[in-house]
Image (tube, rainbow, N blue to C red):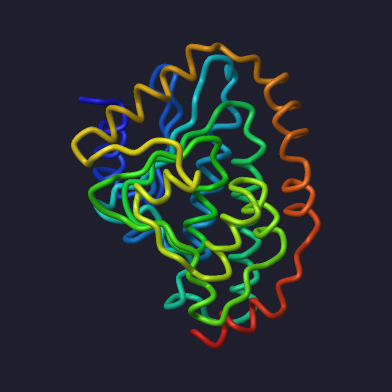
Length: 252
């Protein structure tokens, strides 16, 4: 059994919303809250998992993989049903901002295993990783805010543009286009695609390949921060959320 499948099974058995495991040269974060929609509790659990990762004494020769226990969903974005007011919306946006920032500034390579739908906030959670691997049998990756009249905040737009390029991001963001795995690969949104039978093994093999590079975490983090400087700066400073909060509030 693959180490990723072991982590999934362990998270399910523990009934925890988010599981963190270190197994050899892999650090694994497993999302396990229904369709992994973002609410206050789920954001807190995600950050606690990253806290566990960041206190590990040895980081050299490690790779982080994130994935979901849900057979069809990576994350469906903001949890409209369980947010009660503008303050909670703002707190969730802050939680998402900080999660993306922490993934983006990781001192080890990161791989998002997109084993199902990744919508809205889930799209950004996936795109923050250095590498994205998507399931060919099921799942769409989409920024659907435009279809809900919800503007995406500036910092997310800076990140999306830097990650996949201006034209590709414009089509994704401003048109709300849905992409399957093959289309996402063609557009550079994901890097590798595999069917359901092989995605866990292939993701683990790729993560293991990265880990074997035995990269120095200090040098890695410094160069990574230089390359993603514009996204990191915007995520750290640009929080023009008022209209986004208002529009999300209209969906509650």
